[in-house]
Every structure is written in C-alpha cells, then in structure tokens.
Image 1 (tube, helix red, strand yellow):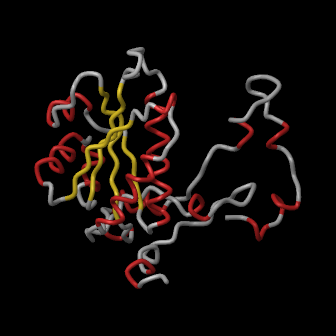
Image 2 (spheres, helix red, strand yellow):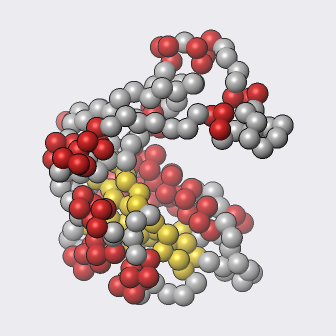
Image 3 (cartoon, rainbow, N blue to C red):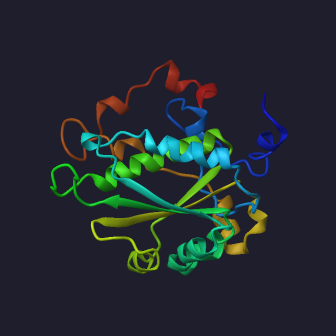
Length: 226
C-alpha cells in the first residue's frame, strides 16, 4: 500500500508529458532532473536501495569500477566539500538537496592492470540504475558535470587510479516556485530530445535507420504516448 509520505512526493510538480514515438515505462517517462529540491530527509532504507541498484549494474569483465562518496547534511565536512567543488551555477540550487554523491571510476582493471577504457561508461550505467530506482521510490536525481575534479580529489583524498567523474544531487522534488526566477523558468521549460533520425543509423553514418522509421499501431496510438 502506498503511504501518504510516498504518495505526495510527485504531486508538487508534474512536468509536461513526453512526445514519444513509442510507449515508455513510467519510471523512464516521468524521470526528470529537477533543480528544486525539498529539504526533507531521505529515508535510510531508500538510500540503501539506491546504492543496491547501482551495485547490480553490468560492467566489463564484472570489474564493477564504480565507487561513490555519499553525504547527507549530517555528514557536514563531506557534504560541504562536495558543495565547494561545484561550479557556482550548480551550487546555487544543489546545496539545498538532502544528499550529494560523487561518482568515481577506477582507471585500471584491478585483475590485470590494463587501462580500463570503459570505466566511465560502466559508472554511467550504475548511476542510470540508481536513477531509475530513485524514480521508483519517488525520489529525483540531478547529475552534474560542472564541478572541479582536482579540488574534490584534494578535499576528499581520492587516491591515484580513481577518477572523479560526476556529482549528483538526490532528494524529493519541490515546486519550481522555490527557485530564483531564472532557474524557475528553466525548470518549467519544455522537455526535449533530438529526434531518433539523427542518432540511429544502419546503412551509413548520418543516414536515418529504417528501424526508427517504422510506424504501427503501437507508435501511432495517441493513448500510448507518455
């Protein structure tokens, strides 16, 4: 049964429906990257579930190159270090989120010592898993590339062989009205993506694949849109 605390989380702001060519799972179609976060604390069991989802992500040779430095506001020193590492544009809103996380990728295969060129990709998959799990729990995640990797390496004593890749904020989404006007306008703006034709090719690079031009009852049914 859905409890009141879980049911009211997504009612604060509903983004516009996506114009998709095929129906998507609701966890994907409702996912967004808010800047407006409530200061409400995340339940400990949900935090564990997020990282458990990341733990079960696929990786090259099952190397599992992802590592995370996670901090709630109770972890004052680490949380403040993560805030300090952010670029000013991100710091303005991210410091309100109840949890900040640094995603770190190992740079070599520990089993063979060879450079791990897919480590960032595998870390990205683990964060994607975490993000979908967050949606299932009524939480939101906003990922940020705008941070000073050298600074965060120093502040958090990240050892050689490990690369700070991403910082992300986690929490309950809040209404955009809580943001400064410029950020509120961005929050309320239309959601968009490039069309499939510019990203999926078959016969030659740059030529739209026939695989994404298929039209059938599933893709043409307006009720199937998410």
